[in-house]
Length: 480
Image (cartoon, rainbow, N blue to C red; front, side, top):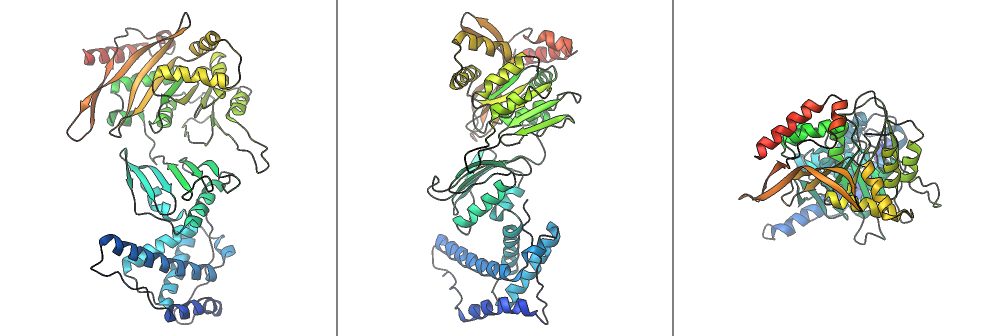
């Protein structure tokens, strides 16, 4: 969190200091002379009464905030820790409210205090939403409209910003923490919060109705495969197979649509990487949170204001090969870097992983082929498919269903080539069977009856063959 902290010039109750009186007396006099905003009439519709209350609240907040900025010493407050700065700000705001004689209830006064502290020290109106661990996404569509996603469903909130200038200022505060900027000359920006939550900002003139801010929140308590089993995203037997896939250094691509949980699943799989392996991650915004001790995290860099200095994902992946990695993990494969990742998987970096946007395992393979073509590689189609089939061992498909739930729908092996076609086989599939009275999807994970997967020898090499056989047998018994 950025602490634009400020030392407050205290305003004693008995005898205010001269600077404080000088800064606040004119405002107080204006407040006394200015007629109070009329209260909303009781016979008005509820929406109008709420709007009137909102306008009165924001007018009061604006006056208090202006008096606070006139009173405090920003250079001194920067020397305080966050908690001390918050207490100092609360003290001075209480004094301002008393001197200006605002008619506020205790609850309104507490709300005003929290809002102003959040404006000065944090992310303003976003703070209450960021503090909630049940929110998956925060979507701000201009200053007056904010939506959140809870339990897979999108709903509108009553959170609003003072104006578009305040919203853009908070966005600039967020992206500046990771050395990026957003303004009219650079109106699109990807960034992250300190906890790894993904942030996207698109500002005017590209965003017509005001700055659009989207935050993909990460839970404070990182999800594990056991929790995914509890939520029904995968069966216990399927989770064991995923553990083994992560442990025995299969090359894995996690495929899925937007919001399907690809990054969460990738985080879960990396938990089974041995502690003595050197892992290098490449991401546009550093989101992965690996628990192993030997991890090197790399992040791309956008061009500067002169359009120079850009470091692309492909630059990072190519540089990884010179850093003696044992595994390379690419947060999201979007373009020609897929070719370098496949080359790495083919040249001794077993156990490398990445995510890709695709709706089915077969579509995932097609997308990799098209991304290689986008990179300008003049290779025959059959050669490209041979590279893909020789590099990828397993595709794990994730999906977000229409009821908001997330499921692992396929665990698919890439077997090889037959003619010009890449051959795959499913170890497990999720079959949807309908929905219940509440609109929740009913379905089950089924074994496809493959007796021995293609990575069996690899599992035996790592001593996981017995556990793999037990998991496959249990899945077949449940299915039958």
